[in-house]
Image (cartoon, rainbow, N blue to C red; front, side, top):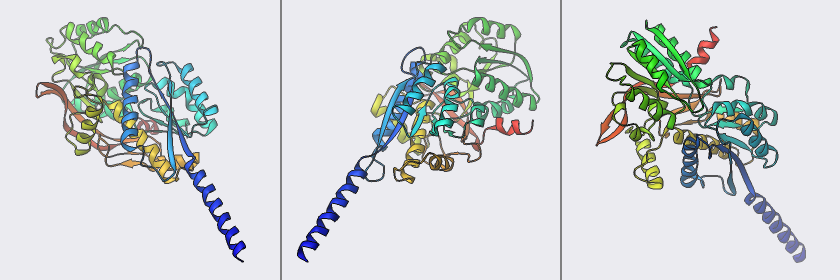
Length: 398
């Protein structure tokens, strides 16, 4: 009898050890795709900083025995073929449970079929092309869509200006920005006197700004992919004396990004945008976020909206991991991602629309002002506490 009890206790101990070993080996792999080389490396660095900050502050907030491994790859810029190749490697060779990242919409579009075929959930940190989501059931977005800011800005602008000229970068998000603003502006009674689409690669903004100056609109609506392109666009606006000509500048938040604002100079004063985030916001969650960012990366640096997109994407993925206790099923992951919401995001209350898997964002009317000798995007009005993508609503009516 004693021998039997001894053997039973040994067996129980072995089973417990086996279960413990299995639990400790539970690793969830996240494939993170960003731009670390080429002209877009500054934007990719924003995503990288957001991921690293989230992991440092929240990486241990997982079920017992579950850990996360972030596998990072460089897409080298807006190069769809490269994006598709590195995504395939992450899916086939590294066997990731989730994909996330991407600055660029063309790259997100390139991997959409892969995510569907392999059933690997992807969460967009920044890429904003809205229609990609229509036929990509394993994709969700926590960043933004261009119409969320461009369309309400068009309505606002029509109350102040009669004639507008649009100037956007010539790729999918730029086209959507142009489309959204024009629709809102015309609905408000405004007139579009001209539109230009500026080349994506190595843009020279001067001839386009000269064309706009010659047309004498009341206001320019601008969109570009942020980073150095935003600074170049603003510099051309100043160099050709468009402010002195009485031509105002408005746009999506990409044209006066928080991380680039100081480099742009005082020409940005008074520039009005609609956007979902500002580093200058006094929301408690944002103040804590900015303080943590500055502690980690330096007091002189401000987090831009891409950092916030990366932070919230990681939060959504961690939510899906926790709810499954680390045992990842792709279909369950997608159902959970549809339910994700945050009341502690730096941007305010944010969630994913379960119908479209797209983000529901707050949107703020912002104006560039000087605060304490520094340029800042000051939120002066909440346009909407939570706006779905207006483009999808518009498409339904067509």
